[in-house]
Amino acid sequence: MKIAFYIIAFSLIAMGTVWILQGVNILPGSFMTGQIVWAKRGVYVALAGIVVLAFALRESRHLNK
Image 1 (tube, rainbow, N blue to C red):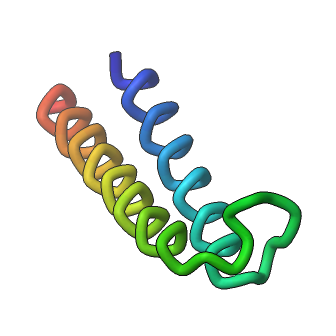
Image 2 (cartoon, rainbow, N blue to C red):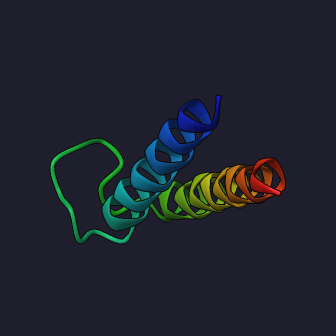
């Protein structure tokens, strides 16, 4: 189960990062390029990934005790 949380967390962080870069026009090539709304959504998605990662790390510490 811990591995699933890691996969979800890193996927969200990666997807959020791509959306941020596309939204601020650093990573061109899609309909999201240059639209700041996608950068904002990317921040929220990346933060959600960080929360999931923190939860997974916290759970793994509790299981090791």
